[in-house]
Amino acid sequence: MFLPIVAYGAPILRKVCKDIPADYPNLSKLIEDMWETMYESNGVGLAAPQINKDIRLFVMDSIQIFENLEEDELDIYPDGPGLKQVFINAHIDSLDGEEWAYNEGCLSIPKIREDVFRAESVTMTYLDENFESQTKTFNGITARVILHEYDHIEGKLFIDYIKPLRKKLLQGKLNDITKGKIKVDYKMIFPK
Image (cartoon, helix red, strand yellow):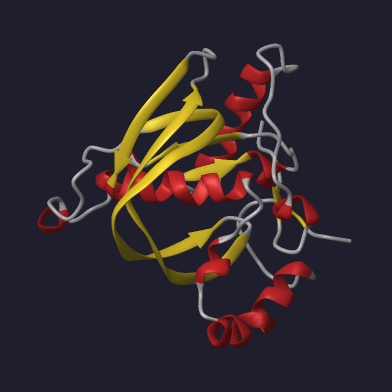
């Protein structure tokens, strides 16, 4: 089932989310709905706050990015062919490597893209969809998507990384998103 995406300005997007227990109600259905919502919205990641849940859950699929690269771009990122993964109760253990820029966007902040600097790799402890504990290191574009979604469960947004002047220039567009004055091809919930 397609779930509406929460728009910028909603308080839930600024909440630090809470861990969930293994018996969280209807978790597998929620994950299935999140995958459907992410793909239907043409996203590569989706975090629970974006569907109005304040829990530490996100899904991501960087395989799509590699499938859409041109032949001469395939060597740009070290993490091909990408990863499709569910992250539950994720917590960062360490960030490593040089920070690098990438033009990011967000389903909750449509039609705005900005260069964001993030670490090359992240080591994270999390539970997979079977509630099995994992500690893994991710790099390249996969690490980037994971860090973007991780920020959501920490109450942060990609626009928090841009310079204050640039953010000020975007304020009109951000206000329009909050007020629902935007056309997107997926269902959204706007703050009241």
